[in-house]
Length: 181
Ligand code: HQG
Image (cartoon, rainbow, N blue to C red; front, side, top):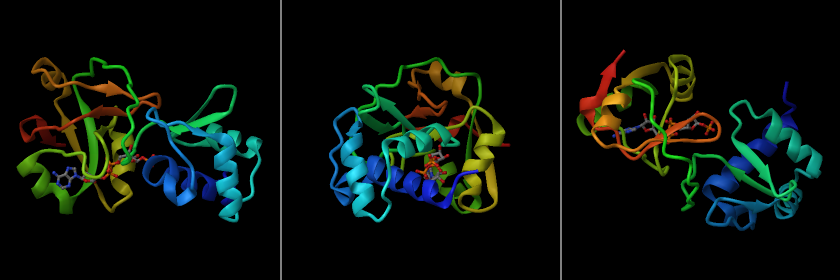
């Protein structure tokens, strides 16, 4: 299992790389990459002194494969989930007939009125199966699973992208394609 230290590194990476590079005084390029060296310095400043091997272990052990390393381990990025403007260019991919979205009861009336919106992120995040959607919803309370008619959406011209860690991304899911399940 992950040590508390690794967990804290993972949370700091999520925050800096997706939402607030300034908070870590690191810079993130338009494709989402940051220099590993600058991230290590930020961790040091944050009281989480770490080595490149520590970082590689956190990347490898991330339960959702949130991060990736590139350029011989000199660059790191989050694979999805950003609120800062990045262009990750995951390939446009034909979705399966159904995808799933895990949420909670308190959002249902808004979702059924206006569809699924990206909220603070760049895309609506959809899961390939119910169990994953259930885990996503459970972050906020008792999960409610919505079934999305992604095949019909694609046939009607909506674009889907598949991130490197298996998350399906789209701009908006109109309510007509959403079923309680
Ligand atoms: C809800 C995690 C009101 C939506 C997970 C969700 C995922 C609406 C919340 C990834 C709405 C947004 C993304 C509307 C959507 N009105 N509420 N029209 N449309 N919502 O965190 O899907 O651990 O931005 O149901 O595993 O929960 O970060 O999206 O509850 O893959 O790597 O607004 O984040 O991955 O919440 O989660 P989020 P999400 P990580």
